[in-house]
Length: 273
Image (tube, rainbow, N blue to C red; front, side):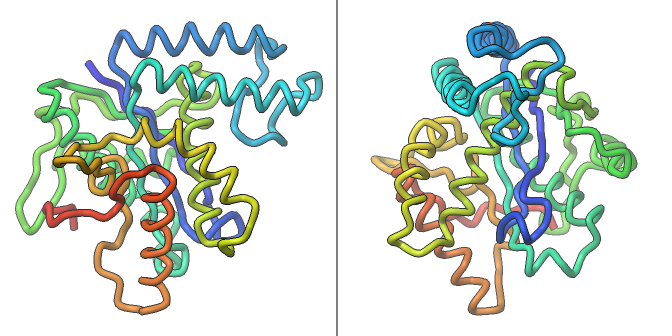
């Protein structure tokens, strides 16, 4: 039984150009290994019971130095790669998403992530659970995803044949949530850096961060090409009519492809409406 643990970041346009929602997919043995690894990392770098281990440096407890907090994050990402945990992400430009309510934006993100996760479970011939960071507004939508599935090109896609459970979790309810926050936080840094001037020093940092992170993004090998677009990376909407918005998506895909040495563009696989 796989577990897909989801969080969101860049919740508004002041944080970055793109809203980002995504998470990590754990197999049962990976859950245990990641739990044990995070437990040891917390002890090593001075995190106490009740302290949050998150990506944002500002979230670190006062008794943990910036150097130790940074080292702890790097150690978590390294362990996620070692245990071959997979990540699935969704992005949408805030300028496009602004026409929808916060609740509707999250629904659209969950639709795409559930669709992607269902594909992963089919490819693994596995069953799974899908858990989002606590959001009581989304409870009816989780019910709908389980009961009704998704509309994909005017056809109904049943999800519960693979995704057996939809639920919620929260920070500090498991070490897995810390791992998701750190992985998604690193992804957020790279997405936000993609829109900066080529000469900006953040690109060097993004390259170093996204190297280990990119191995987490669920991918498919096609010949010599590793494709993350449509697997671990989903940019929506697929069709963008405003040229300046399309250029922002193109720039993001180009940079993520460079950072990850993968193909971030998507193929023509049918997606949720």
